[in-house]
Length: 211
Image 1 (cartoon, rainbow, N blue to C red):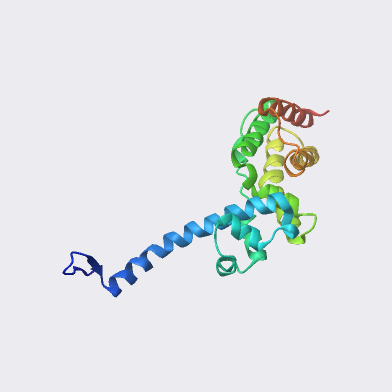
Image 2 (cartoon, rainbow, N blue to C red):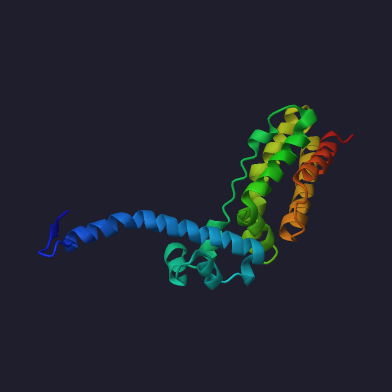
């Protein structure tokens, strides 16, 4: 990289050196820009759904040109797919005694709500699933593979038959979907986190132990 000083004491960078410096910085800048766009998209999709969300609103939230959304994601559809990637990571909460399964699940779920907030891609999927077929399919796949299936396996490990485990896992799945919709999508809010953990945990446990 060539840098020289002129007669006035000012330093100058050669065109080649300047081009190298700009090119070297682009990957990091591009990655940061992409993450800002995704964060803005998650907020907008979670707040307004797929249909009402505009590319211009997402771009404004990320402080970028709308053209960059097309450049990085191919448009609104591609951006929604990228912003809606959900990893629940709930397997760990199933590991433990049957008597505290409801408590463990409630603690994990409410903690997620507290930590992720308005950028939760699960909320974006829930809000969009009624108007966007792809969102509904994606949501079903996420819940089936990352929540329902591992929960059913754990219930079978507790000694329930496959049919019993399947029925109770589905009941819990429907309950949690309804609770999440009411508190997160419809905007009721989670209220006092400790109280919410308690009643969600108690309800799950009753479904686990149902006779």
